[in-house]
Image 1 (cartoon, rainbow, N blue to C red):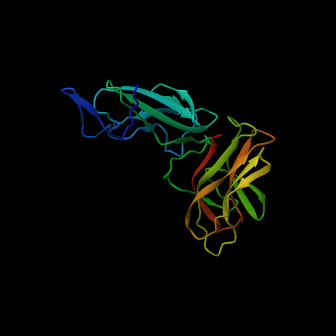
Image 2: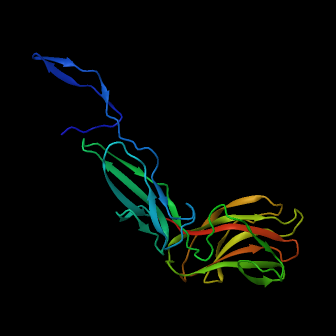
Image 3: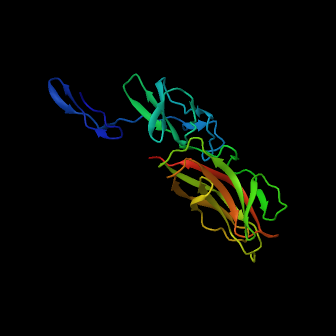
Length: 255
């Protein structure tokens, strides 16, 4: 059985009146759709809460191919329906659509990934309004405020225990900016603590001055307790020490 090589030229031969003749080369063209396959239902690619029912925005194929779907979680197949529910354990979700034609030709397209955000209590979509935090005792914000010393202040984004696994690697990232005056004393950063007490990682300190930073984040794993506390923290507790948070994301790193 001959194999079809898409995109390659093939030299054909035929017989005419008992004599072989050469045919002009031709190319097998892989069928391509109009539009892209995209996962729908999440706030954004970076922010899909656990339990979200995800759907698909479908491309358009010429002809009437038979369509099939394959959802993957961290590159492992997990479903073949037109929808998929984001799991509590987190992960990176993609979907593949395969179109098979009566001619025997076929093609597969793959969506961009969607990341399950394990921070269920704080999941604004990317591009949402910034939440301002004034690092003084009387400030009231979206986050629960705790003070570890007179020289610093931290705010609990969320205590996470559901879906976490010992030994599994996770990635914490977010969008934070320090809008304090350039002469302010302290920086701002994201922080993760295992069992609310053992620091497992923090972002570099974001200096004052008002610039916007998309925090690259950091990777960590849990070794003692499957519980982590995510904080946004200031290095100074004083009037005029102000920083803003747009989104925070905790996702499982694919194995």
